[in-house]
Image (cartoon, rainbow, N blue to C red; front, side):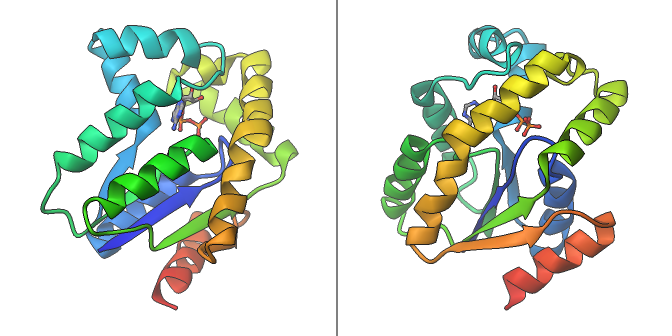
Length: 189
Ligand code: ADP
């Protein structure tokens, strides 16, 4: 199985690039952000809970997020592999994912981390706000909070995969096609 963690700060381009990777490698794309938004739209219990965190740019609690992700993996027993997009976002999530995958006789192949400077992220998120309809893109304070949460809670997850020798940084600035081919090269290497 090819199991990729596509990592990077909010606005790094994980969603866009995931589509390209899915097409080329026939993987199942699991975006925790997308799953939460679908639950918010459907007004499920999970959605109501998640919304209260997402709207202020905070993380949804680990316990809820981990359980949701694991259930999504188990709903796709025939997948060739997965792209984890937006997960793991804390070290506790990374540890839980390792244990869970080990229980299914598989593991993370690689973490590919899209690297984009903070100023560029703010520009991209403000632009995305014009089309995404996402309340968490529309408010500069919420955007700043997401960037802070990334720096404090999520960036350490890179260290976790570095210590396993699975981390690879990818320059996330350039055209969409250029970045896609950097990702393909990293996977095929
Ligand atoms: P982005 O990467 O652009 O910030 P996402 O769509 O990945 O957006 O996530 C949107 C929001 O959903 C996050 O700000 C957070 O509140 C919540 N979320 C997504 N993934 C996780 C996760 N793994 N753990 C906790 N909260 C999450």
